[in-house]
Length: 236
Image (cartoon, rainbow, N blue to C red; front, top):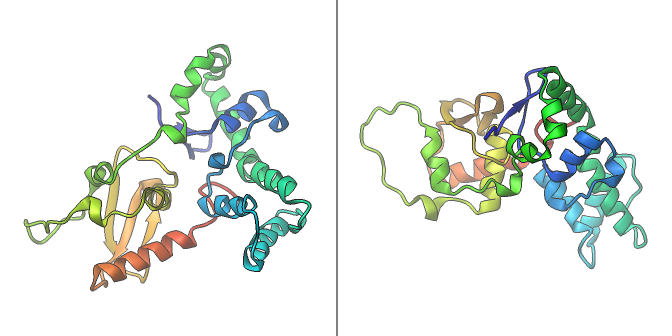
């Protein structure tokens, strides 16, 4: 299975949703069926999901309105919530990625794969596996990590499952680490300077500062770093 597809400019795309697949091959976003899980940015997804609540607090209303206005959409009110939900979802999933979709279509045509995909729709899921089907466990993540060299040959024993975050937080970590919510063939860890953890997604490298004295301090810094990365990989 080809889990990674490269555009003509060298950037990488993985795990396209059915809505994106539809626009890629049919070109009409109005006919695409989009669900909240298609939104690649977990922070924006959570904002759109606020519109599914029966009541919005003033703080949540302000959060939704700030996002809407930044995308040239009106602020939320009592009568436009369903309409605004759909508009935000369409823009988050398709509108923000149209440039990348055009690049992807060009790349597929340049490498002469386009005739195969248009004549054999059954091949498309093999080239672009669905994100919902890409499930992984904490142990699967651990097994793929290349750790930095240690001074001691003795590894500290710990319970991976008990210390691992929730599945949603683990998905956020993967997105912060490699740019998408899926496991690559290899994960890398590097000890570096700085205050907060950082990541080089192109090299699948997580860079961790060495100044932490407790696990709690490390966990809080990592969560802060993940929460600050709200823009979405490859999106503008």
